[in-house]
Image 1 (tube, one colour):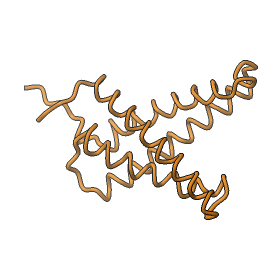
Image 2 (cartoon, rainbow, N blue to C red):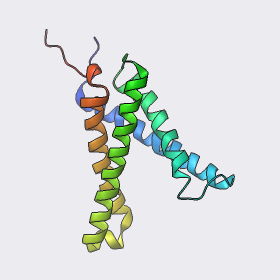
Image 3 (tube, rainbow, N blue to C red):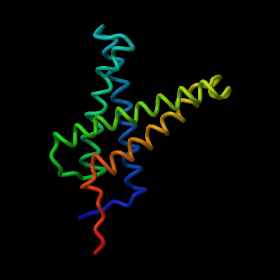
Length: 138
C-alpha cells in the first residue's frame, strides 16, 4: 500500500483545510447575500458544507481511505466540531488574557486556527481514518 510521508500528509491536509475555508467563506457569503441566513445562522449552512468538502478531499487525497463512508463521515464531522471548539476556546483565551492578541485579534485567530488544525489532524489520523494510517513494517 502506498504510504505518504507524515509531513507530506500534514501539508496536504493543511492545503485541503484552506480549500475548506474558501468553501465556508463562499457559502456563508452567499447564504447572507441571498437572504437565507444571518452572519450567525449562516454558519449552520457553511460549516457542514466545508466539512463535507474537506472530508471528501481528505478521504481521497490525504488518507486514501476505503472505509465505509457512513461511519467515517460521522467520525469526521464530530472531529471537526471538536477542532472548531478548540479553535474558538484558544482564540477566546488568548484574546481575553493577552493584550497583544486583544488589540490584534487576527493574530489570535491564527493561534486558534493552529490549535484547531492540531486537534483536527490528530483526530483524523488516529480516529477518523485510523485504518488508512496504519503503517505496516515489512
